[in-house]
Length: 417
Image (cartoon, rainbow, N blue to C red; front, side, top):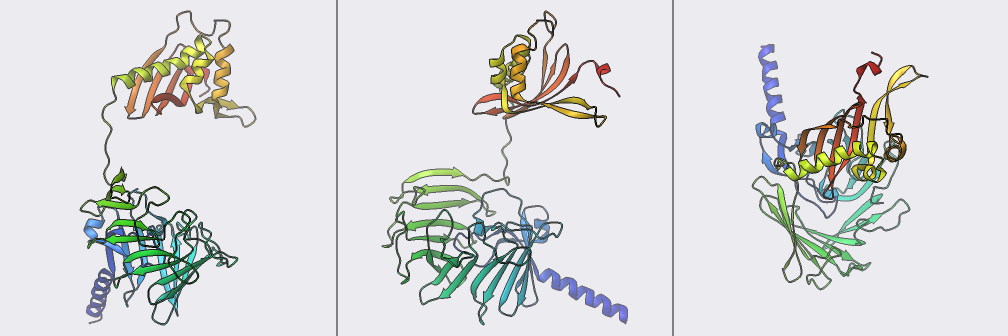
């Protein structure tokens, strides 16, 4: 009987865990405020989640978020307010408080994207957020990377009024790059943000320095943030400080943002951007003959510069951040080490090292083998009379340069085993 009871409890426990855990491909986009609730969009099951990027939401027995695990490894750029900025967030609740702490995969406390260790929301008796404060690892108040220490929210007939303060209790802007002081937030009955308005002390809509008074948002039924527009105090479309009035976001059927179209006030497109993400990777085609010829020329140019006293050529073929290493010996430590040579030293060597013309045979043997080329990086093997060298080249602004070089003497008797 005890065994049956134990098994029954185990089944109930597993069933409860499954019901209190949900998986999502994405988080709902938020560029409005930390007042907006964290919400998962594009729900998936655990089997699908095991094969793709996702978030895990765990809920307590009364439906509050208890934990979010961030397994979202796609690399598209997201707004700081739309990112957890950490592997795991733990939510704890005390009377009129929601506390969020942040952890890495090894369960160590870390900072989130706001560069804070802890966030404490104060709520009213209806569980509506009214204040947010940031703390360091020792629970001392700190400012975020936006120089904000405290958010305060007040519900009015029209807005959720937001004010932000630094540690000196001075009002600060929405962010370092956007001049909105006191703001009014409008959200719908489902908690979806609709707009953000720049307000004066009388809570009247005003234009900021760039003539923008609000930005307004549209979401589709799947939770995708599909459109945002900028307006002046008269609610007319205006060009923002980045020279567009309308942003249109295109998504694939899995909720991945794949393109951004920007328009002016006349709905004329001013820019169209492909949104990079490792959700879809385009492999490089096979290297062109032109690249192969250029790579050989640059690689052999390095030897030619040494052999023929051409410092200008050495300067041309080497990247300024050259990392050249060979096997050296530290007599004090009595052990072999990796010994580095800088680009500046190589240029000096090209001036004088073969000045007598006796460092190389009269007709030096310079052989080259391209080991691999992938788009804008390449690995080369050089064989000369004296050395075996492996070069790594990089293509910058259309030009190939030697970035890394590791070498040893061709005669292995030069080294102690």
